[in-house]
Amino acid sequence: MKKVIVIAAHPDDEVLGCGGTMARHVIQGDEVNSIILAEGITSRDLKRNRDIHNEEFEILHKAALKANEILGVSKVQLLDFPDNRMDGLDLLDIVKKVEEIINEYKPDVIYTHHIGDVNVDHQQIHRAVLTAVRPIPGNHRVQDLLFFETASSTEWMTHGSAPSFQPDWYVNISETLDRKLKALEAYEYEMRDWPHARSIRALEHLSRWRGSNIGVEAAEAFMLGRKIID
Image 1: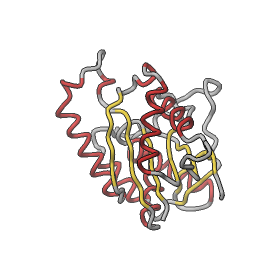
Image 2: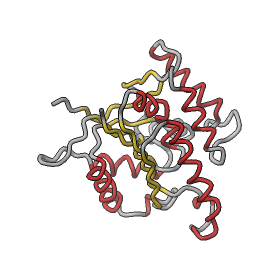
Image 3: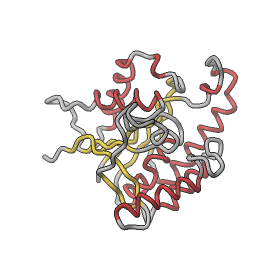
Image 4: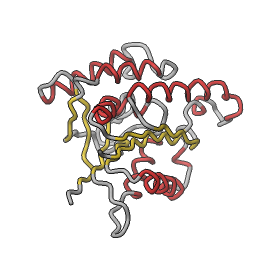
């Protein structure tokens, strides 16, 4: 059994990026946990005010629990870093939290955001995870570090503005695509209508396209950050 954690910025990012892969890990007998660092919602206001969104937070948190339950996730941890404002925090504070998470779960595999996303929270979390998993002798060593694409963020970054997403690791999710799409349906509050990139139909098209990249019905694509073979 492998211990797998997904470190995502916002509720729904974990499913958008690797929901099918998460479900596949569970079917294979691995333990999968989701850690969502930022709260969601408050970036829609001119000034952050959590107090006026209590009802929306409750809806979003219930959606996250339901979506991850559909995938078979063991535990969902929802933190409260500011939504789309994590570039205003000291990176070290995010690193310390991620280190704490790694010490708690001791994962073999971590999935997280790609650095070239247009969303600033995704960028900060990528940097924090990369720092937290540095292979210091005597520390817990993560065996596989993988970066996922997030629809309506990764593809929105313009060429030359940041490193582009160039997948070199694919996971066949032909048997778990339905679970991914059902989990996305649980995030009704976050999903959009077609032809938005964050619509159910668009996510199915992306999965089918990534599958065609490797000659299967459906897949999710990643970039390998590091692999350690002992």
